Image 1 (cartoon, rainbow, N blue to C red):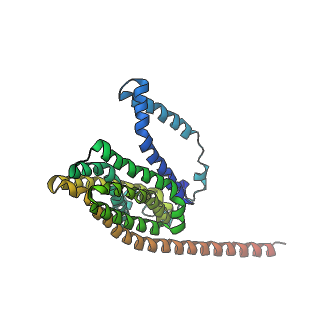
Image 2: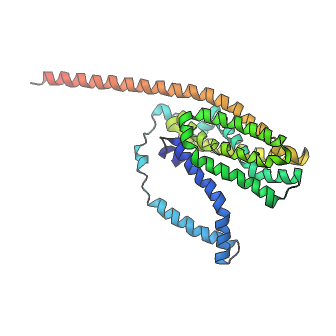
Image 3: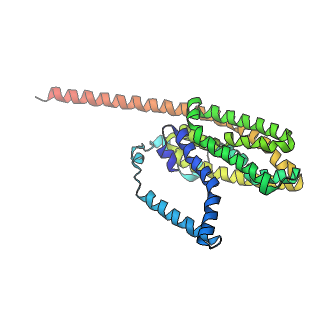
Length: 307
């Protein structure tokens, strides 16, 4: 959650760029792992030995990296930190709404790798290691490139517009892709470009809505989103088993429509919370200015009395 404290300005640029490296690691990771297997000649154990060295080196670098920006972060006021304990945060319905919404965004993200290749194998008979692998690779290449390049555009058009637009476009691509039958494997991977921005942009939005509370609340939101994603992925498996192999992945249209609807409620409540927070900030500034005036008057009175 350190990102919510560091990236307070141009958040979409930095968070999307940070998550770009996740995608880059997903692309380069298998190649690095196979390199360690061949170089160390120790089977899969060589992967863990090689990665352990890299992790230790990065950990040492992290220890000696000064995060001076953290010192500039203002601590929350009593009104902002009220209800800040974990139990009290779980009692807030809006936090659950935010967590479930981003959870469904994760569902359509992981569905490409979990179910996409299997869908084209089971329904159209394609080879998982060829056409299926190409499908997943195309998705993640576009997914990763989007996180690298989209940050500045997101900052320009706004978080809400970016997320709403992405959800609508993903629904359209899914519908067209599924209607194209086996040729849809060339269409559906383009959802990766628009799905790629969803999670980091949503985190930026939480920072904007919750302010000083965002670092704590976002951790709860991520927990709820992971639980939501896991349950829905299990549901997809049951759909494939009991309804038909073609329907689990096709239901991604529904899984994208659900967060679109939920996000409408997130926006309505989020706007109210932002407005209240700004009003509270204005009130605090007025109180501070009045206190400063009182202090100035008292100091002036003292100086006139003093001979």
